[in-house]
Image (tube, rainbow, N blue to C red; front, side):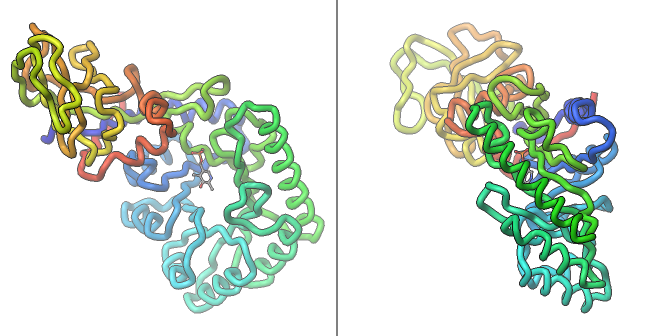
Length: 369
Ligand SMILES: *Cc1c(COP(=O)(O)O)cnc(C)c1O
C-alpha cells in the first residue's frame, strides 16, 4: 500500500448533508456538485455515499464526468452545469443526463438530438442574473421556456441561476445577491404567467445555503460546504472537512549544523538535527508554494518542512532527538489539523483549488466511522 493517500472521511460528509438538510427544511432537494472528481475526493464513491445520505441530484461539469458516474452504476439525476457541445447531445440522451441550456440554438439542437435518439431530454434553463457566465438574459427566460416545452422531445425540468457573491458578508455583495434573487423570482413569475411549469427552481451554492435563506427555492447546489469548508471566513454554518492528505516518514537521517536540504539550498540546519523524508510532493498536489511554510503532523506533533517541496518528496525537521520513528504516519493536512482551507489561506487561494489539485496517483481511501 503506497504511503501517500487521501483519506476521505465520509462520516463528515454525512454530517454536512445533515447540517444542510436541517438548515433548509424538508422541502428543497439537495443537489451535490461532484464535478472535478467530486472536488478531488473521487466522484463515484462520494456520489454513492451522498445519495445514500439523502442527496437527490448530482451535478457535474462535463458530459464525460456524467458518463463516469453512469459507468460507476449511478442512476440518480445528473445535471451538466457547463455548456455541452452539440456532438455530445446523443450521449446526453443515451445516459439521461440533464444539460443546462442558455440559448435557442442549443435548444433546437437538443430537440433534434432527442428526436434522433427517440428519447426525451430533460433540460434546465439557465438564467444569468449577474454571474456573467452561462445563462440567458432574464427577459428571454419565458420565451426560451416556451421554446423548450414546444418540443415534444424536451422536458423543462427546472430553471436555474448562479450566485456570484453569495459567500460574501460585505453589505454591497449582500445587496447584489438580493438583486440576483429578485431578478430570478421575476423570471420564474414570467414563465409561470405564460402558463408554463418551470419545474425545479434552484439558485443556492454554498454561500446561498449559509447566508441567504431566500435562495433555497426547490433545490440547493452546495459544493464546498458539503466537502467541509465554510463558504466565508466568519459566520454561517460550520462544516467538517472530508479530506485528510496522509503520507509516512520513509527515511530518516542525521545532519550537522549548516548542512543544506533540498533544491536551491533554501534551508540549512540551524543546529545538528534529524531530517525525515516524506514521499509526497507537488506532483501529488502538495503545492511547492508551501516550501518552508507548512508543518506535518507526526505522532500528534507538528514538524516544520525543511527546504523546498520536490516533485515527489519533501523533508521535515524532526529535531535532534526525534520521538518519530521510521514508517510513522505523517499528516500533511486534514480535519483536526491544518485543513485544506488553512493551506489555501497560506497560498492566497481557496480550498477548492487545494482539494482539486490532489493528483490521481494519490490513492483515495474511504472511511466512515
Ligand atoms: C460548482 C457549482 C456549484 C457549487 O458551488 P460551491 O461554491 O462549491 O457551493 C453550484 N452550482 C453550479 C452551477 C456550479 O458550477
